[in-house]
Image 1: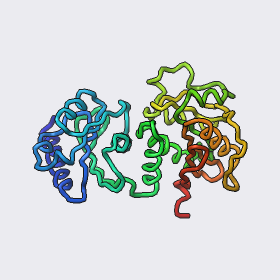
Image 2: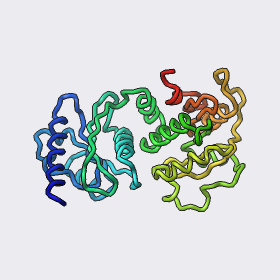
Image 3: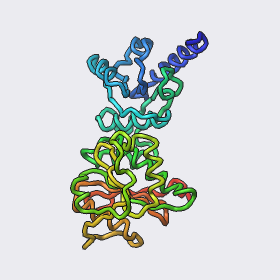
Image 4: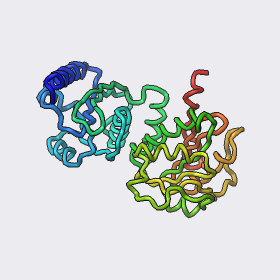
Length: 296
């Protein structure tokens, strides 16, 4: 590593330590696949603030043995912001991060040992995060990084659609055996024939594919571990006695019905408004307007 780069890294870490000493910072999250720098480990009082988020099982085990909270995240080519989002979701799922706590995240480019990004956030601070945090808590049995990722994906679809045109869709996650029994394929399944590693929603390429396939009729069915089983699935669950707010149509009724008859959670993107609604137990548990419409 060039001397100038080493010097920059050292100064960057020092600045992060100085900021992390502030009283309002509850956690310092090292979201990297390289060891935590000695400067951080030696910093006084930092072991009670330090959390490690890594795709490397060996590193996770090493820090867990030392009594440092460590979480393993799926290994995909994340952007810097995605790495932070996945780390935060995993931390919430592991009950490390709690609503209202301030986290300072350190990360860098994919497949790089160089840390170059410092990001401060408060868990549940803005409207998207509050909805996401509550949704992560409510979707029991589904790892937080998957529900977090799907919710953000739905928000993007609602805000931007497909090439500027509005798109509506349903994403059903969890209790997939029951969901598949109460649904049928109405178009060729574009995810058929791929390995599970090739169709996990933590892979950015898979999320882009979901955005493209959102124009298909029917729902996406996604397993609890993030594997996309199907797109273009017609939900057969009975909508009898389903009560929905005025103006919500067949897509929302189908989501309400499937979550009433199974233990799945459904995320619905409205084609007309871009709003994102989350169903559980046959009822809407959260609603979020399209990002592009918030503040109008």
